[in-house]
Image 1 (tube, rainbow, N blue to C red):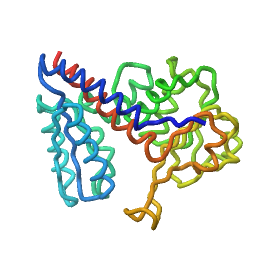
Image 2 (cartoon, rainbow, N blue to C red; image 1 turned 45 degrees about the vertical axis):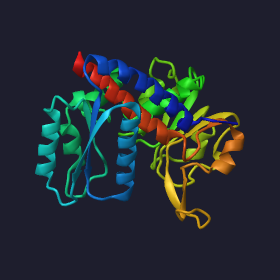
Image 3 (cartoon, rainbow, N blue to C red; image 1 turned 30 degrees about the horizontal axis):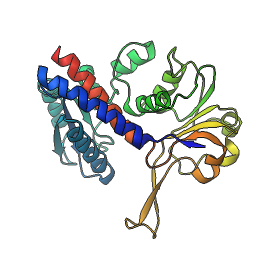
Amino acid sequence: MQLLDGKATSAAIKEEIAQEVEELKRVGGAPHLAAILVGDDPASQTYVNAKVKACEKVGFESTLVRLGASVSEEELLQKIDELNNNPEIDGFIVQLPLPEHIDEKKITEAVSPDKDVDGFHPVNVGKLALGLNTFVSATPNGIMELLKRYHIETEGKNCVVLGRSNIVGTPMSILMSRKTSPGNCTVTVCHSRTNDIPSFTQQADILIVAIGKEGFVTGDMVKEGAVVVDIGIHRIPDDSKKSGFRLVGDVKFDEVSPKCSYITPVPGGVGPMTIASLLSNTLKAAKLNKN
């Protein structure tokens, strides 16, 4: 069993991005990423702070727009419009989830596709489905890069994706089936309405888990030699930790890892790759903006 080390891989990607940023600065300035954070959800604040720190590390400019939880949908849309029309901003994200009184679909559609470095806009999702050049959702894109850098053979393999979200599961299934490397898999998507999920996962050469349930995948659900990518992240109480909790995934790591050829740890697997991909998308947007 070998770990798919997202932390080390993302560090290498950030070094590569930092070098490109130095070149860009000589031509037209550093890439500029903005983030809109609505409310005071602790997890969202943690994610956004990590993204801001990552920007600083690679030489990006960053802007954090904080809005109160009671902000109206109209006010949020106005702020998005400002960022869409600000030539200094190369790309921006609206951190999800949003308060219940705000329509996430409407907000996602309001972001300019040319600045949608999260890859959530319907135009970018449509381009992804057609195999066109676009911004790919950061988590799936990060996983593809991780598979690529570890030289995981995917062509002709059976890939099972657990989860069908628009952010992870669905784009992941598209990417793994495309005529690319990594890619060219035979892909099955399982979800909450799938009967007898183990009968599918036991056939998977590559198992990508984004079902959002702590420890859902157990040892008996995975075949020998499988590659397992765990996208889930959950906090569970742990008195032995200074924080009082530890992070676990959708996969029971101790049960599953002995059967795997490769597996992502939680934490330190997919999470760092997601941020690295967001930076890659922002660099891409900056190059398009400055040409």
